[in-house]
Image (cartoon, rainbow over all chains, first blue to last red; front, side):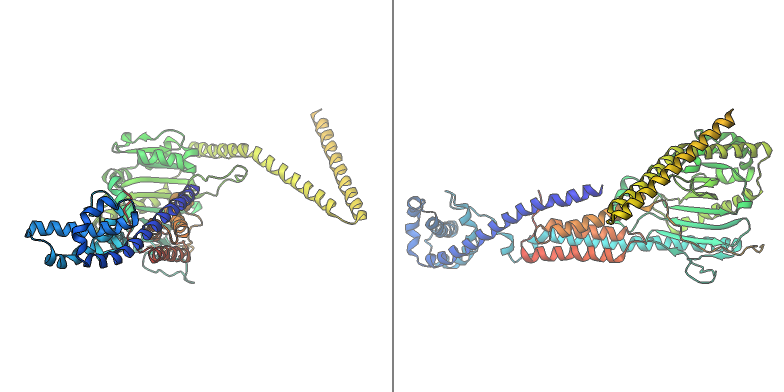
Length: 482
Length: 98
């Protein structure tokens, strides 16, 4: 994609060269016309030319330069003729003097035409007019920029207001549950800043910590990019909503080993493809939650049935049914490592680090046209989050479940090792070859022949030792086999 | 309210939020586009210069917090200087492309 942009930018060069040349010609013409006009002015003052000029058109058309001059005189006179005829029918002496200056303005237009029809009123080249109207494209551009800046300011302020509204609504609940509300990691001591951390014009963070069971909770208010006019226009085609994303990191001892998700079907399908843990542990398609009393819009992805049974207790179902329109996805996972990493082959030698996490994604109602009042409707969802934290701590798998879970995790690890075994072998092989090559180069580069010989001998000895070791190993294996 | 045993954990900015470059390439493209147009079109084509200005504005609006402000400012200055220079050299108003 970057190459595409560079290509586009490069394509502008020949176009710009072409248009620059065109501009030069236009300038040249203008200058020429001016020169002719100076002369023409003197000629027109003498009134003798008036009667003679109609004949001159026919005779002097061959000689271009003169023709332009006379044509100009002719044009002006014709105009005066017409004006005079239209108005009075007299000959031109007095009106001619007045109208000489009117006609003069339009002289530069007449000459470039050089047409047989003397009255060709061509538009005055724009930069010769002293009017702002000719710069209408520039005015449009500047207006566009101003509109963009206005939208930036308005959008930024709206996002800010929404964020503050959310925070003021939720502050009490958070402060009653967490010791540390609001921390940006910059202070030496762990003191609550008591305010949101603005990462961006449309993303606000809040870190809460200091509660039993969980290490901490990171709340991200991901608003729409109201400050970008392009985004605003794109959203008119494709509506989207603001989102609140809550990530609770659990303590290791406070959560059992399971992977579970509930949410809209569309979201779950997407997550199953993107998320490392969901794709590995929840292989089935999202199932309907109707069995547990959930509305049709929600579906469930689970590692095993027991987990679903355990999670879907009355209160949870109540939360999910009542606020189904605001819930995008809820994910409980002990193997959470984020989205699948797109790594090049050969680099994936280690499993990504996992953390026990509860991940909630909520949609703010209003689908774009949110008002600060809508933030209040998200408060019950925060209660759901707190409830889930306690629930995750309390819920423990029974023996069967635990065995299954352990088996699953062992299976995943084995698969991973198998997959990377070949890659790891190749990596080791290439490393060995690199070493050999480096040594050979060193030997070659050694200027002193004595040293060269010695290094070569050392390398030979090392290789011989390796061969011996291998042979020993083979012998041992044979003995064992026997 | 129960007192936490270990004390509250500090906030650590997440190391890599799911490779932000892949999620939202808009600011990078816009920046590149703006600077490319500004650099290439300096005195010649007014359209290029204006679009460069727009690109740098859009890039600024979409910027992530980690974006370097120096880069933003330099693309800004480059595009504005492109516009100014193209008008100094060629004071004619812009003609629409149609």
